[in-house]
Image (cartoon, rainbow, N blue to C red; front, side, top):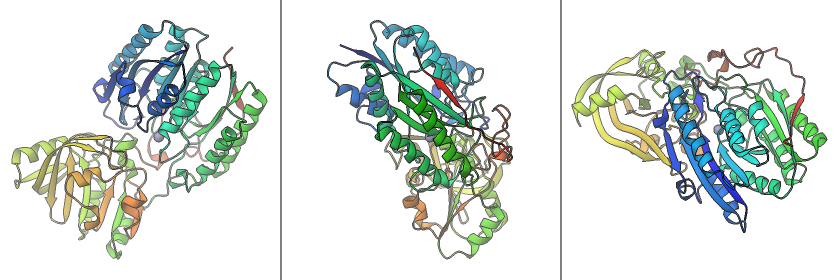
Length: 495
Ligand SMILES: [Zn+2]
């Protein structure tokens, strides 16, 4: 009766968000909670559990899970506590274990540990010993390090962006682990590509990156590889091994793994310039928006909370005010002091608030006279997945032609959930600010006259050169535009 230990640790950080995240930002799941809360959901763990539970004879041993939304770098104390609890749980459940599945994101970063996933895998390996197979699942935005690859037997990587295949990836990881338990001998090849990428060409359904992913999927489908993927890293996680990389896992066939990983990397590299954010200067966008027949969407990827930014940028709001834009504007902003002041003033209250820069001091606060139109508890549900989206407390603040949805927590802002929670239908506005790396077509673009990807400052700007990387290895495109690339595979195989 094979016993499979399962654990989870998922967070994505932006080094350029000045507000550190902490232990409190994690949802901790212990023992059976890890399975019960995720069974049947579109998560890596949900997909893996479904495969394991459908396999006769397998007993699952759930140890520990820690999941957090995108945020600033994890504090030293925060990581120490998550790591201690997770490793203690693994240690307590390790007796008689035959294999381990570990669901990860891959873009963590902590004060004092810039490869948290590598550390956790190294320590799990110490506890479980050299013989126990460990398989992980990763987000394609993760940074898979050499240390991680030294300690795992195999891995499965998301194949879609925007991500829709969380459960599918978990299921692929689970099937890979079962194959290894049945005797498969994984050989992993990876080719590091010195490029950071962003922008609409990364949308796998329509962009050039999708072509590389379909090549990887074909390797899996045709049985040439046990697993294959192409990771682009998270350009905001400034850690030593930040890069893009091809990964191919074969069954004891180093030559195929090496050849196909190089082939994936060579398909990706020539399109690196295409895979950059195509951004519009704010003043130009406002001038064009003034003459549009229909609504304008201003996509502010630089302040995307779902990518790890604070959400408290007021740059677009301030520029619209300065340009005397007269249309009806809808804009979200994370601003705890402003919301608290609105709550004190009460419904219908009139007050002068400072908006923006409450968390990220690169933004200069903007003073506005507002009326409090609505107050609410922002424990809402995402429009996309139905999962929780915690906005803390919310206030809808009206100022002339501006409707400002203010909240105390850095809720996800890529869908319409926050707007709907504040009673605002985006279609009733002339200009809507969407703080997201991409603007969902059916939510905004399909009915708007035009979407502008704005070049604004922020912790998650698609203008990668503006971010100020200091840690990742160089040279890397586009930070050094002349970067060259000679494909070379690194091989990993556990004895
Ligand atoms: Zn991702």
